[in-house]
Image (cartoon, rainbow, N blue to C red):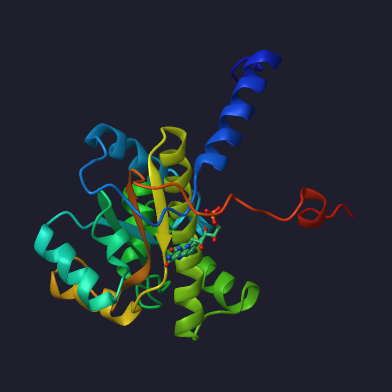
Length: 231
Ligand SMILES: Cc1cc2nc3c(=O)[nH]c(=O)nc-3n(C[C@H](O)[C@H](O)[C@H](O)COP(=O)(O)O)c2cc1C
């Protein structure tokens, strides 16, 4: 156990963190001439990697669309807004596991069990049974492919949020992007050999870079007393 942090350090971290959350805006217009430094983008990806996930499944991938042709194809076919998707330094497609991808009897569960969680084959077999029970009896999603994908996509959004916050901490701008044709996004990624569409599908995108203009409106939120209810 580490030493408890000093009050001074805690105050500093709290104000730095809230400043970053206030700095983070959904940026519409990016400076096409400013690139995020590779080490800074690596930091942002590390934050995605450390996101929590239900059952430790990490049912996401972060696909950085670096090649100009692939990126242009993605923007064109998905209908993503070019000022964001084409001009920001980095365009990222976040994918999530489909129902088949996270099937309790499937390969991915065995992969996570063996290579990430260090389980023996016997432990993996027992985990398969427990996970199926969890999906059927606890959260009641098994057999509903759309709900199963939604379950995985919810985890993917946690990775997204970690990226947005990490970026803001180092004053890198960003915008999450949902406003696009999902089936086309999955198709572009599959055609490029980046995913197997039976096990993985597009969940959400995000761009990172530097703003060329400040947002037109200030950041607005409901008051804390309305958001948080104490019972
Ligand atoms: C999951 C998600 C998807 C979003 N999709 C888009 C989008 O496609 N295009 C866009 O301009 N903004 C998008 N936004 C940004 C929101 O509109 C924005 O976060 C919200 O209006 C609050 O503004 P702020 O982020 O600047 O505080 C998205 C936000 C989230 C969380």
